[in-house]
Length: 200
Length: 122
Image (tube, rainbow over all chains, first blue to last red; front, side, top):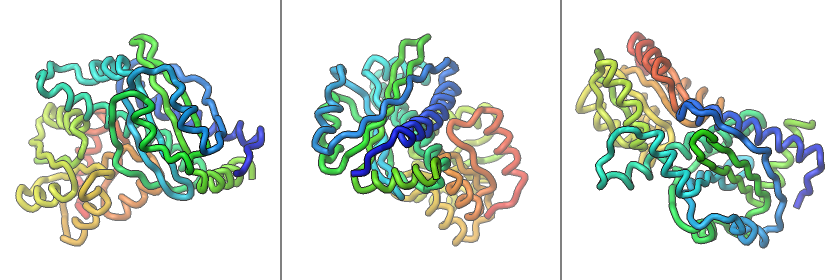
């Protein structure tokens, strides 16, 4: 696997920052509240390490939106909220009285579309910056323990690079996390694209 | 006021965009994917079509291509989460009169709708 030099890591963090910044701007427009972003954490993992590493997070139960991408580089982009944050987010976005029997459907539909919009903002900004073209699958939404949700979708033999950015809507105590995973095969292609576009 | 067909698989986006269009006095038709959208176009003759891109069964690109093959003259406005430059160029090349990224601001949506209603279709 290609190793990331300090220059490349710095460039990668900046690309992620720009993408997540676009997503934060979008969330700010949706909610009308300021979004605080944390510095992206980039971790290069051996493929067999990734599932264990990801499931060390201290969440009992999460709401997870997954958008798969493919093109010059492929992988998974995910948006995670704790269950509490997910409920607060839906309350903020869908203010009308909602019939109890429709609550789950509305929550699922709302979080899926919010995830779709934010993950597209992150990945699309990255693709635009890098001069690449990505295709996406229909986003999916699930709730449950992180390990249970992640194990089926992460292929241990094909994941290599983990990029995490946490964001907070401080006034509403909502916290979410973007997590991007690149497949090993395309990871090398991604590094090559990154190198050419940003350092070449 | 116009009869507008909104094609989007997301109930959240149908609700948000539908609210703005209805409050502006437009008649609203809705469909969950391109296939249902095509049926609605043929049965209900909208004045404007608004479509998402990433949808199950028939996505927005195939929907645009199908409309083009049918010789559709109804203007089509794309509203998508996809911010890639290529997507915008592709949609415009397929005859869309405009593209907004989700979530559109209310005034941005209504201005694009007004502009699209003043233009020809594909």
